[in-house]
Amino acid sequence: YADPVVREAVPGLLHDLRLEPAMRRLIDARLEAAARRQLAGQLADGVESGTVRPSVDADSVMDVVAGAAWYAVCVRKITDIDTAA
Image 1 (cartoon, one colour):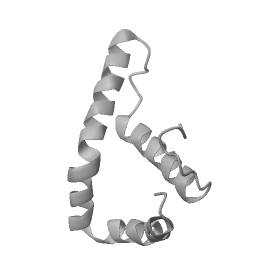
Image 2 (cartoon, helix red, strand yellow):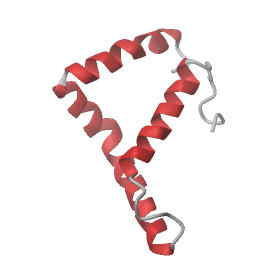
Image 3 (tube, one colour):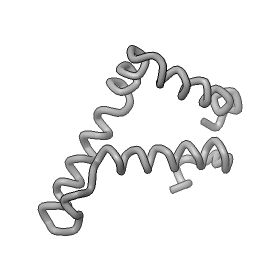
Image 4 (cartoon, one colour):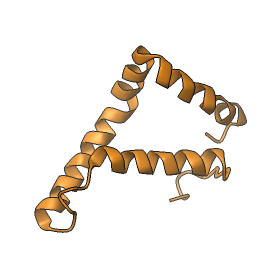
């Protein structure tokens, strides 16, 4: 996302992801599925240990994290994504 061309392409990509189910499935399979499974596992461990409420939804948490990351890069123009968190 540090490349200005990539940042400018994001709105179009988001639009296409909403309209093209095949593209959405591809992105999910290649980029999101493993991260979502890992987060779900970590949250389940937290529920088991009593540190996470059972009502916490892994997909919603992932959406919040991803949205915040996109905002930081695209709007706040964060370029060092390794230390931005």
